[in-house]
Length: 70
Image (cartoon, rainbow, N blue to C red; front, side):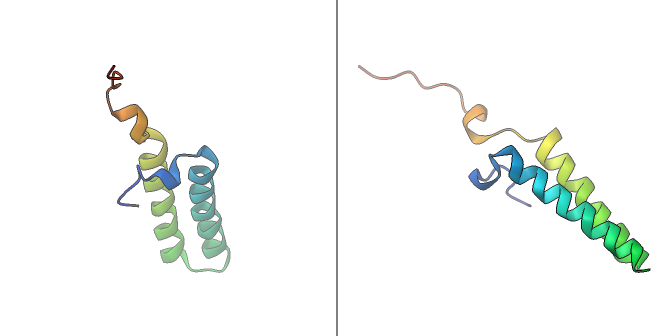
């Protein structure tokens, strides 16, 4: 997730899906008795929330508007 502003992550559903997969993975790990991997997956989910919802700025919004040349 180093390049969280990649165009692939522009649709909201993809960012939500990444977080959901990490949370589901964490639940599965805790349910099977492997808390180390559960905490690791929960950390991934927390990092994804931080990157995709708190810090996320799509590439189009980050750039100043360009005036058309006539």
